[in-house]
Image 1 (cartoon, rainbow, N blue to C red):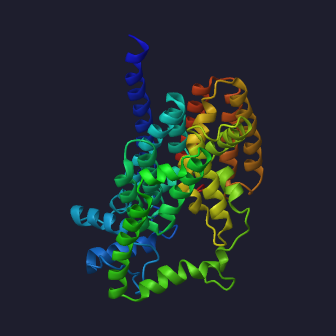
Image 2 (image 1 turned 180 degrees about the horizontal axis):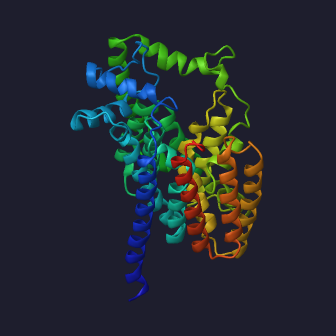
Image 3 (image 1 turned 90 degrees about the vertical axis):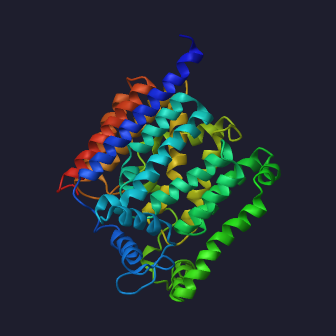
Amino acid sequence: MTASDSRPNSARRDVAILIAAFAFVAAVRISAPSDLATGDQPYQVDYIRDVVHNGAWAAQHLANGTAATKPPLYNWLAAIGVIATGSESDFVLKLPSLLAGLLTLLLIWDLARDAAGPDAALFAGLFLVCSTMYSKQIYFARTDMLLTALIVVQVWAALRRGGPLLFWLAGALAMLTKGPIGVVIPILGLSIWWWQRGELRQRWSEMHFVWGLIFVVAVFGGWFLIAIRHDPGVFDQLVYAETIDRFKATSMKSKENRHVFYYIPHFLGRMAPASIFAIVAVVALFRERLQREKAGVYLWWFLATFVLLSLVPSKRADRLFPLFPAVCVLAGWAAARPFPRVIRACGILFALIGLAAAFSPLFMNTGALLVAAGVVILASGLAALRLTPRSAVIAISVAMVAMITAYQHSAPLR
């Protein structure tokens, strides 16, 4: 068999590995004790039930009558599942996130393969699916996974085969998921990268930027006008409480107004192990002046989003999630580099971060999870010093899945 003949088989094998890893992590989450009462999920459930039981497709409300804090796309998708199955089980309520998680995984594999080759694609997918943050979001009745999937679709459409129509359609759906941030993130990252390459005007012209943006605003605006006709409180909630008010010192969300460096420890801990490899990638891309290469778009997707979110006063750790796919591609790129020192450097970094996580609440939540995360990262980091890159990444991924399984199925840890 020639090298060209083996490539499709290799791609199929790697996709099968990633789908198997996804299926295992999903099974761990689905079989774990219900977490539907945590993380603001009860609010989302109220919105879904408002659609199902009261026909509130235009504007959803909490059980107490308060207007929804987010646009309706997740509520619509989950409500369709509830109506179709006649069930309000955790699985049905969380199904949009589960499907969005699988779509994100497959598209990130394809993007990383185009940017840095087959090994980087496998590594990026494993870093994504075997992380604590992703494993949480794929089975969570909230908008974060759906938003992230639609952002990835926009990037894939701009860089691969989708073209302007898919890009702006996904942008409109992202706006209907969580507002303007759904188009700001991909537009910002792509714009910086194309500007670096001297292609900004040409590429946005090819993407029909003006007409596309008009389409996105028209779709979102059409829903918004219908919603405020049903309930003027939608305007107060989405425009004032969820947008303008967040920037005021006297904000109702003032408890979320945190330091500009708030996201740094969350990036290091919650996005491990990809975060460690991504740091190596960022340093290498700047040091070797490779920002204009294909991996550069993920550098700017990550950095621009991270800076933007850090400058917004209101901060929550889950808001970092839309940049996580970019972090995973960067991590895959770094792990696939043909220099042994990269994997050795990451092994040492894993060991240091593992020690810090085991003995300090700086990087993750307090309690037994800290110790478990520290031990896993430390052990896998030390293993990475002796293994080939592919073996090391697989070993680290297996260790992370073991930790996720223990965490999800252990009452003391949860």
